[in-house]
Length: 151
Image 1 (cartoon, rainbow, N blue to C red):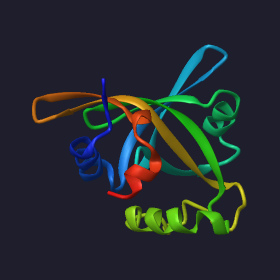
Image 2 (image 1 turned 180 degrees about the vertical axis):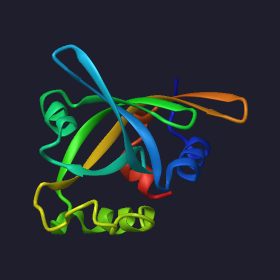
Image 3 (image 1 turned 90 degrees about the horizontal axis):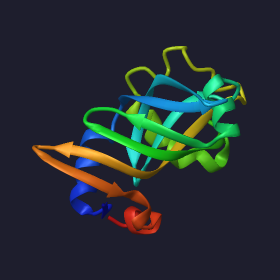
Image 4 (image 1 turned 120 degrees about the vertical axis):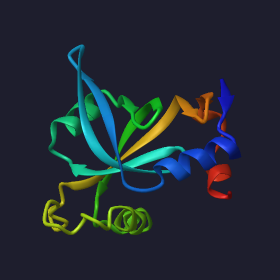
């Protein structure tokens, strides 16, 4: 397994650094649940706009270990609720999410005045990425967030 490096980060950003639909799996009472979510990748994590009272968030609160899959990529990670979409601490990621999801974010599907509208951050642990005939087994934990942010 290799650490997240510039080559892999470039592929991940090109492929997932915009609006993508990925599958997100959670587990409750030993039974897996999977659903499709719109997600945006940056620096070893995917961000999703969701609802704090949804089944996925309830399941993640009990067991934060998740799995994702999308476009020749699978991974394990930890789901973290970043809290209310509109809180000041989320302003930087909200700006990026608004840009990534510009095609639909204000279509009425989300109620940004509702304090239960939140941001789910999926912090990746490990994954497998296929690109142009190459298989990359990635250790996302092998590189600090500050290293990723300075590239």
